[in-house]
Length: 270
Image 1: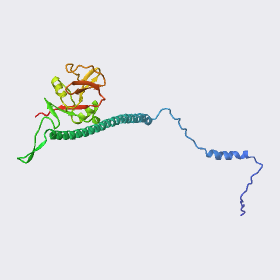
Image 2: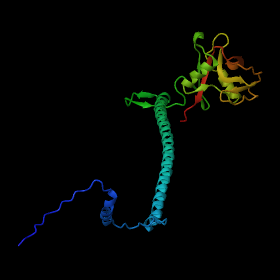
Image 3: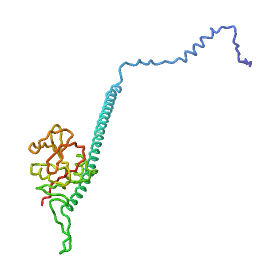
Image 4: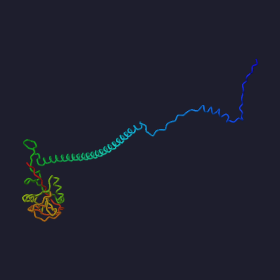
């Protein structure tokens, strides 16, 4: 039996055949790969509900923040103003404290001086004297201290230094103040006569400063009171002071001259 042998057929591509003839096959391949694409809808202009809801929250947060900042600024300014006031008050209190401290020191010093003066007064007016019988010292008080004379309720002391140690009116007054007294003043004619008789008799005029001087066209005592016309009538000359002349009354001389002087103070009440 004759069998017809089948052999494979090999085809060669003809280079002369145009590519256009092959396009249908390629087109089928391309068409087979085509896929569909869904359309995406356009975004709507309407805001989402979540965004709309977040707007009041953000606004509230900003409002709270602004309130906090405003309160901070306010309280900072208030605290600063209070601090300034407290600083000024502390300074005022410190000044008052210093003043009180100075006053306390002054009072303590005055108290010490007063105690010293009191003790001095006791010793001056009530000196100790020894009694022979009891052999002990006792104090015997008197109206005026030693060296002072008493008249009515006043004590008087005349000072009669040598010419080189005599003083001006102001200097004599300062001396009397150092003895817890002042230059003598006269209240009436009786006291005037008593003062005029004070001093040690000596040759010539013995002139003693008294507390009277011309001021503003008037005769005035050192405390500012006017001289009674009944005591002395003498034209006042500014810059002049009065001296008491032993047993001759008063005389007007320059306050700068150097004279003797008479001091006066209250007598001790016994």
